[in-house]
Image (cartoon, rainbow, N blue to C red; front, side, top):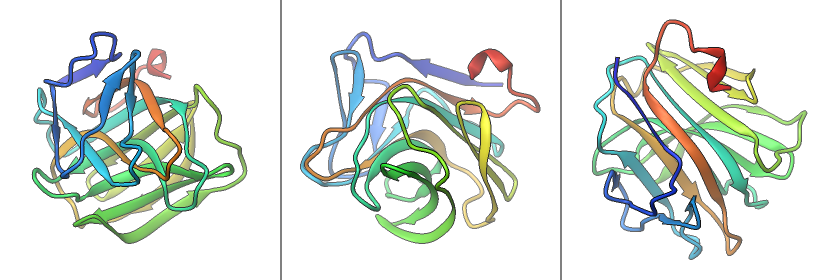
Length: 183
């Protein structure tokens, strides 16, 4: 079972590969989104997870504009802005979407009963056609979609002029049970 993590303390982006023309940046110990309003999808290049996989990160700064945000991604297609992306996109909504060539191809679910906050831990898992999203260890969104069967794991962002950032990323092959210490 291959997993990896990054707390971004070294400001080294060498273990990340961009699937878009724009890059995220590592500075100040966090992974910062591109502040130009352009999309960025970063795949952890030290991993080639199998079918069941997960991606998790801690939100440090978040955007408050609809359909914009930052969050973990799974089944990232190399060289294309295609993946399942779990994002917070307003001050009170989390969403799971399937991205295809940089556009939202399908909205797979949302959770609006809570307010995103700094240090929220966002987790997305993909196991077969089953997708699950959790916030701070509580499952909030489940969906079924078989469009993307494999790919990498990482982080995706699309933000307005506001800076968005994540920290403490982990991802890789999904165990049949995720240890509670990861939450």
